[in-house]
Image 1 (tube, one colour):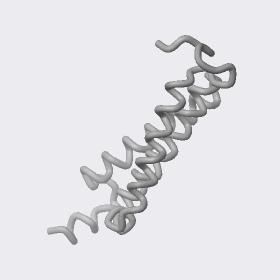
Image 2 (image 1 turned 90 degrees about the vertical axis):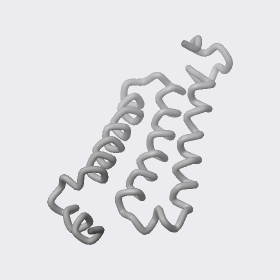
Image 3 (image 1 turned 180 degrees about the vertical axis):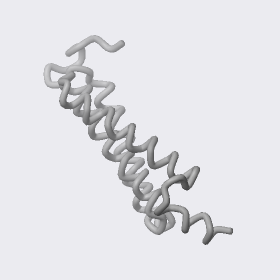
Image 4 (image 1 turned 120 degrees about the horizontal axis):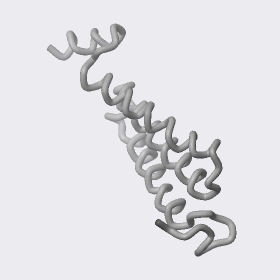
Length: 101
């Protein structure tokens, strides 16, 4: 991995922090798209991508446990929403399936 404080005295893992911001930019771009905003599940995924990017930047910048949670918990949320969107497993989402048929 990247050496701690190798490139900057302000970031523990400078390049990991910097590259994590790409997720936030991509998530914002997704939210800018009208089609994404029309579907609440896809919009939730886009928001999760933004939060993943910011949380990952915070974690790799500091290497603190509480920021590690900011990195990992949004990933679990992202996976959960993706599974719900794919399977329509939640009872509140079943109307989407019947509307698509």
